[in-house]
Length: 423
Image (cartoon, rainbow, N blue to C red; front, side):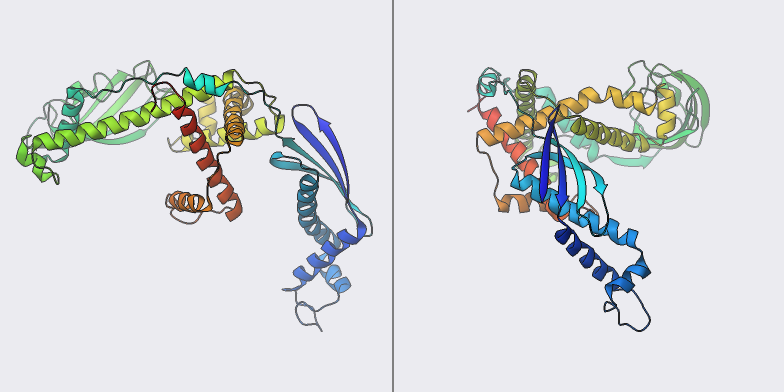
């Protein structure tokens, strides 16, 4: 095998690889035999026809292309291994010469691990202060009220609805850019969880009654395409129910589980809130250290890696938009952009994600942070539980993906332990 390595700008290399004729011939013969296994040729058993007859039947081009695919994969891996090239992502392959009786020649352009001038992450971590975590009495009371509502008894109500009733509604919303968006919802009237003015329109209605009206969405509405827009509403009150809430006392606490009294329940709630706040604070500390390290580190991101990350983020966005019952084309019209505009805007986020990933990788290597096979297997099984059926992914790639998740987690936890006020 002959390999010529050209170093390109922005942490990329181009490998020009020549596979010797005799090695290339082995792939051609192997592919031809594999393709002949299910081929019916008069006068021969399946898989036993002469290779030249099989080639006539299948076609030289098909044999060449399938042979090239497996040959390129093997010799590309061999080339980067022998030359100790640490690659990032998959290569872009260009076939230069593809013919029988000649060497197979191809180019592979691939991103490599960029040289990183890493900031003093230990100093940054030591200067990152941990906030004191407190649980206020009102937080415990809010949790108690949520538990109280979860144990509420409902009874059908005849007559106009009023605050503190349970209502079930169907709304059709239309705006200048959005038509016939149907929503079903159920909630306690008067809690102010809907857009301003909507609950006032519902109050006084009876089950089965319908009403049409217009309201404006708040300017800070979470759906950007609706923020500040005037909308037409067609509302139907499907059901009204009276709510009977249990009294919050020792008996209520005992009904929820192994609690001796209300004080024991409150103690458990406080511990749960504290644990959740500590987790949030840990995440804040970790991300703060990582962000400061990223800002003060220097590296050159390969274009191939950047473009692939932008595509990944764009696909994530498309998936989110599809869940909102709107086409991606309509979304682009609403924000008055095309896909290329959007890709350009995603560059900053893509660059940040890549830099964070590379920094964690660099720190984990410096600190010799690793994971065991047992840990990888356990985490992989946890991840697989999130799928209704096994994902269509190469097991070795899934294992590597799982390993990266675990090492990143351990590296972030290592950085957190270096922070101020962390025992």
